[in-house]
Length: 103
Image 1 (cartoon, rainbow, N blue to C red):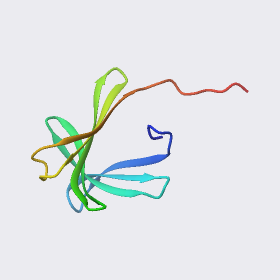
Image 2 (cartoon, helix red, strand yellow; image 1 turned 45 degrees about the vertical axis):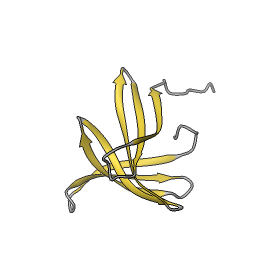
Image 3 (cartoon, rainbow, N blue to C red; image 1 turned 90 degrees about the horizontal axis):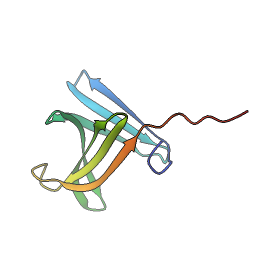
Image 4 (tube, helix red, strand yellow; image 1 turned 135 degrees about the vertical axis):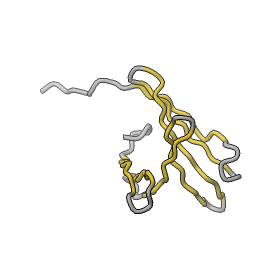
């Protein structure tokens, strides 16, 4: 479930042919993306080039644990192939107990 309540699925897997980690993301709206995985300063990031209505940039995202059952998700973009990054968004997540209903 996305931060906005929409349904999305992600799968991380080792691509044996290209010898790299990849992340596949699918959204209920029909969006489908394949990202490349890279380790930076001890954290795993996913990278993908975008061209959205002429806005051409390299995007990267990471999910970094910040404590017990907590993590931060960071999304950035770069117009110079990763030399500098601009923050797109930063979300903090905390694990909650599963929702249970009464019969």
